[in-house]
Length: 102
Length: 102
Image (cartoon, rainbow over all chains, first blue to last red; front, top):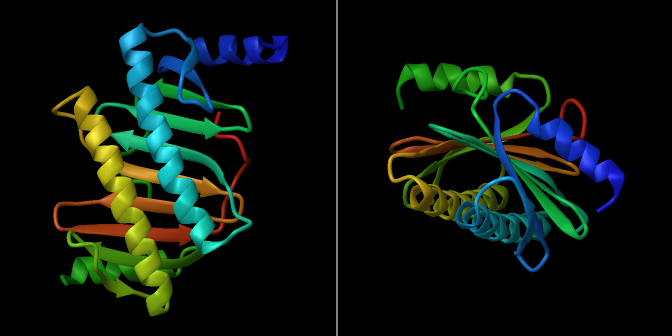
């Protein structure tokens, strides 16, 4: 992978509250991760499903619209999903700020 | 619906950048909305699918974890999904801030 990506990954891993990351290819396979295999595969699966569901729904509404990112906040974690052309980046972090997004 | 909810809705509708909202019950039916019927039903459907996919994936990872909210950012819109016990609140707004969440 390009140096720029390596640098971004380093920056993310040393950010406050970041628990882990996974990079998933378009076939749903984790290709880079700092978590164990079981966790990486689990997040890769979650993300594939979420992206497919979102993209279908978004495109149904507006053929030219596209998912930029998805943020899943749970009681214990915050999961960031950033899809790109060939890979999807998943970052798992400890939630920050207040509970409500409004 | 309680007065508190009505007041929250009023506050949301007058917030900067808010395009619309829908409140969906657990059966996936829009029960309150400021958009037309077709749009309300479309968002209700999107949200049902996303919540189910997310909840299943989250609970697979940790039985005690729970979805607090979901934020979908697309090229043109930002969709906020806030599930609660009986209803799910969906707010559609114009995106604010930078493109990247990191």
